[in-house]
Amino acid sequence: MTHETIPTDPNYAAQSGTARERLLDAAEALIYAGGIHATGVDAIVRQSGTARKSFYTHFESKDALIAAALERRDERWMNWFIAGTQRRGKGARRRLLGMFDVLREWFASADFHGCAFLNAAGEIESADDPIRVVARKHKARLLGFVRAECVAFVVEAEIDARRAAPLARQWLVLLDGAIAVALVSGEADAALDARAVGKTLLDAAVKPAATKRPPSRRTTT
Image (cartoon, rainbow, N blue to C red; front, side):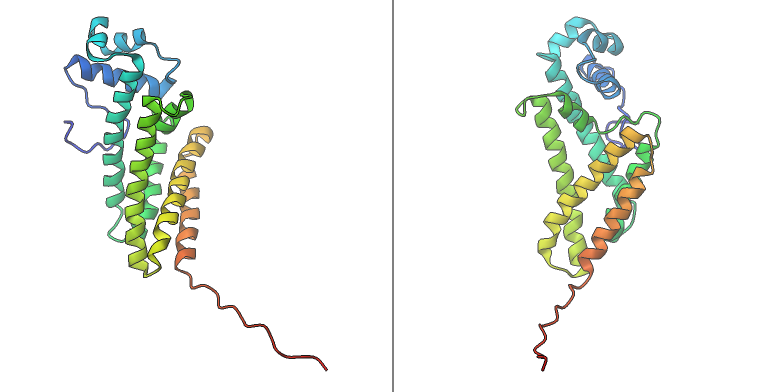
């Protein structure tokens, strides 16, 4: 598999012969499995098979390496998620609900450890830290993709276009909620529970608002 190939596994990082790429591969794998604070530079260098000098040649700090590894993961994960979503059907409704089927496949994989970006953000206190910035950009990028599908959905369903933005934000909460529940519970079917809630949201969005009855003018005698 080359870097240009859309991966079928969001955790897959194509191995490269360069020292920089090997360091990125090692950093991503180790922090995703064990966390940032539990992973030292020595462990990253050892797993990468490079010399410690290579680390300092390419990165000014451990945080810089991790931020770069997360940026690369963002690109790969989004390519995987978008491709999987688009394979779920031509209609926007089918694609939106299909997102949870894509997630379920990921949840069922042996090396699923939750969302790397939420995990990383949870370990970093400062909102301005480069690692938190990368995590925030990833969620913004995911929201942008979801919003585009929600825009397509409101057009498809012929409903108020203003519904797209709040629906997208709610959808992101469902996606991240499913990831969090699957991580803690170990149950891949958390994706199906989120899908059911999503279906309710979509149905409610297209359901005509109930017509309010005017107050009765009848009087008693």
